[in-house]
Amino acid sequence: MAIRVQILHKDNKIVGFVDGGGLTSFKNTAEHAKNAFFVVATEINGNKSIPIAYILTRGLQASQITDVLAKCLHAMHNAGGKVISITFDGLPANFKAMESMGANFELGTERFKTFIEHPSTNERIYLMPDSSHMFKLVRNNFKACKILKNGKDEVINWGFIARLQEIQDFEGVRAGNKLTKAHVQFERKKMNTRLMAHTLSHSSSTGITTCRVLNIDGFQGSEATCEFLDTCDKLFDMFNSKSRGIGLKTPMKNSNSAIWAPFLKEAKEYFLTLQCKPKGKDQYTPVYKTTKGTFVKGIVTNYMLCYRYLPTYRQSQDPIEILFGKFRARLGFNNNPNSVQLEHALKATLCYSIHACTTGNCIELDELSNRINPMRNLTAWGAECEEDEAVDEGKEVDDATFALLQDLPSFDNLSLFVENVVVYIAGFVGKRLQKSLKCSQCKSLLVPENLDNLKLRSDYVLLNTKNRGGLFCPSADLIKVCMIAEKKIRVNLAMGLSKVSGAMIEHAVVQTCLDSVFENSYSEHEISDLSKYEKMIGHRTTLVREITKYYITIRLHYAAKLKSSELVAEKKRSFYNKLGHFQGY
Image (cartoon, rainbow, N blue to C red):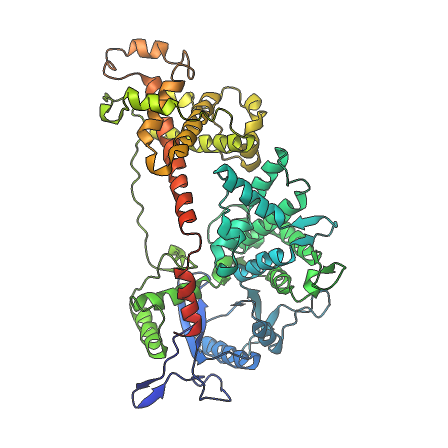
């Protein structure tokens, strides 16, 4: 953890210099400290995460890390604790320290050894490089190399990810993923785990696959890239499993080894056969034999981990990152403590319940803390078809305004990419309305009568690609309403975002599609209940209105978010804040 460089007087001593705390020694104790090195113990079968040692440093060598770890392991044994694994990031000094304690990271040799022996009991302690850091190295080196090759000599190209982000920015919608410019140009936020996880994800893979199936230029030959992204996504899920989960997200144990063991073996071989072209050379070389092979070493080391019950999230560095967040939050506006403030913050954290901020690199989960996050009750806003409600006339748009709207471009033709995204959003709208609607007949109209024929449509490609069995498939009429809403939204956005009116769009959509969707679906139902709904304009109008409201909410929220990101193209506050931390200001 980076701390503020400051020399202070405390208890008749001058502090702020490097200090081994009796755990290790420094040659030059007159150097001022810039970092604090922490060792934190995290429960595998509980929710405690306790710092057991820290020293003030200006950079550590492998021998000093070895000294600190050895004394911490002895202390844990004397206290009755059992250590089963050690987690560390990709710093070369960390790997050298583990090698000095008995490990061997020579991939492809019989000497490869991913555990050390406990100095007190000689029991095995497995080594687990932090998965977040390893996959950030995967992403960083992938972009640096631009081109990788798998064991089949197929090309894995970073350009497909950049091209997908360009297509989505041009069309103004995203194909069920979170790729933005910040994900592609991440150099100022290399340590941001969220950006890495969004990039090396199944969602990015399905977006590229959708563009390839739709024959969009620039995505031919992207099959190997999608396989690479899917492998990284599954492996990252496996290395972040918690006490509960499904499939690869479940804790690793003998009873479910049939789920994770075969894939883990395949993933190991996959990363060992990855090739890149080193700078200044013409031939491709296995990545693990180059200077960029640290992530392969870390991933293969994690493969060798073995224990009877292993929720792998507990082996990540998130607990220590959250601990640092608590230290910084403890001091209010001063989020860069000096050595004395760090000591006070540590004592307060151990004695009182302090929560980390919610905007840091790692988010505090209830699994690793005693905090309970109360869920807010969601208000059902959908159509209450069985209640007597009057239409709010105040939200209607006058005819003059509606006539003005008709003079704008019509956007009659949407691109096939946009149509696929609209169908995907329509599925989400239908799923939410299924929960809020009370009329069974209205609910049935959101579900297609002949799903097999509907799936053959060209605008169903994205939904079919992303669907693993849990996505809602919208009916043709539901899709039609959303398509019309999308066109009207684009007409309004052409006027300028400041002039966009949700009520105007809603009025235009209802007027346009009221007579062309859900035809003859309510005739008998409305006649039988005519006396009860004499103040309402009918179930069909209400259903179309609620579909439109929900779709407009989703799209305008994204439009506003996109505009905000354009106005602040480069976020400097967080960059300079982190820069101040590392510089010791």
